[in-house]
Amino acid sequence: MENVEDIKSVEDYFGTMDVWSIYHRVVTANNLSHREIYTDVARVLSELEDEFSFLDLGCGDATYSAPILVNLPITYYCGVDLSATALELAEKNLSLLACPVELHKIDLLQALQNTKRQYDVIFSSFAIHHLSYEEKSYFFQSVIKRLSKNGILLLVDAMREENEDLPTYLQRYCYHIRNEWQGIRPEEKELVCCHVMENDFVETASTLEFMAKQAGFSSCQNVSKYSAHQVIVLKNHLGL
Ligand SMILES: C[S@@+](CC[C@H](N)C(=O)[O-])C[C@H]1O[C@@H](n2cnc3c(N)ncnc32)[C@H](O)[C@@H]1O
Image 1 (cartoon, rainbow, N blue to C red):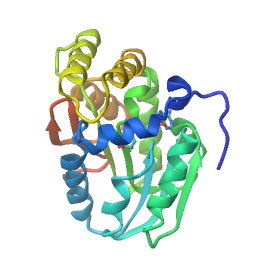
Image 2: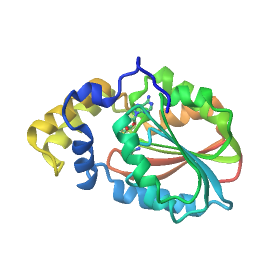
Image 3: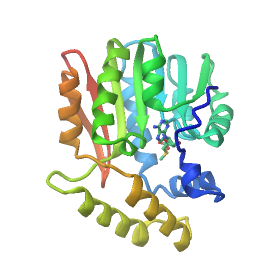
């Protein structure tokens, strides 16, 4: 695994708190719609015509991706994340896969820049909202270069409503966390809200589609939407 000391992981933000314990409880209580979303992700992947290689950008602990990939014709898995703790857990979860697995502690944009491989599926779930607008544009430009001829970008993330500005979205999302989220304590909710207010640069679906098309993607399919949490598929070839 590579070291990127100058880039802050979420653990730097939360300090000594057991951030993965909080995230695990958030996800287990389905606050981010993982159950529905990963059912949709499995369906999209099962509809691919061929076996596929898979790059997971911001893979986290792979709690949800590993069990769906184990039933699919995956030839190679590469996961990248900034969190050493997440990657240690991911290594255990991904040991279920029969294909070669590589994990790297590296910034996802840097990983896209470094790799010489082409991937059939590039996947990112709840990670790119941490990137600035310019970084997101660069993300799409970098991803398209690393996709194989019939490759897809499968993107899961929080997205703002069309015509909703970022401050309004952040207020609404934090209200939702404080009032609707299950599985974590009120003081943990406040930490999450601080993290969201300072680090989430959430775009609308149409802004992400605009950036993707500027980068050369030819089609964008909105697969599903669960409140603010959405799944989209982008292709760089015609014929969805
Ligand atoms: C909310 S978690 C999502 C984890 C998993 N993909 C999921 O859907 O549950 C976001 C993950 O992205 C990672 N991350 C955030 N920014 C990143 C970056 N610039 N490069 C690599 N990983 C990043 C974090 O360390 C964290 O593990």
